[in-house]
Image 1 (cartoon, rainbow over the protein chains, first blue to last red):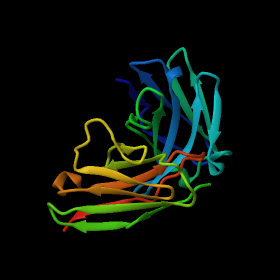
Image 2: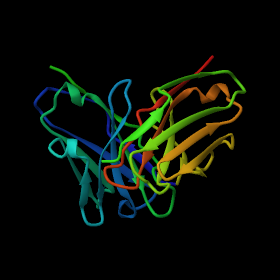
Image 3: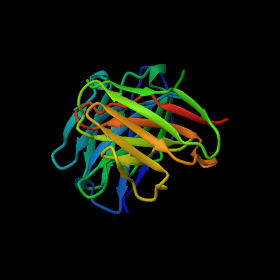
Length: 119
Length: 107
């Protein structure tokens, strides 16, 4: 069974950037579309975008196009989410999840990374 | 973008009761719909995919139905461990959008 291990919590200053990771274990990352989801404290879920590590093609929700950048490193089986020009609105937990042909969509989720933007 | 309208926003029910949560899509999503359960501090857990398929390990008291633009999640014989938030998500078109969520509490 595949497992998704996300990087640890981040406390970052407004205006800076942060890069979060999501490591796939138990399978090769190229078998999956890697998706990222945002959840602000006490709020609902927002789909940010996805990357296909096979060809690095990406899709983003419009509101995240100038905020988020998705990349993947097949050698380390890891996907990354970079968030730029951080504001308090970016304070949230960020989850990674996957789609693959072999299992139901979004059956596997990472544990989430809490990003706190504060001066 | 496809808008997902989920109702109710909150729900209070008694143990053993049957509850239903609904999601309406702003256009046909061809049953490309998932339901998740999320408890505080945890990641979302997939309950239902393709509108009516039960995910592995999910109790059979959970069921999904619907087609076109109208979908529902039913929980039969509510248990205390079902207290959680529930979200629907369409994955027919990018961007994949979520409903606003339903917070289920015990009466």
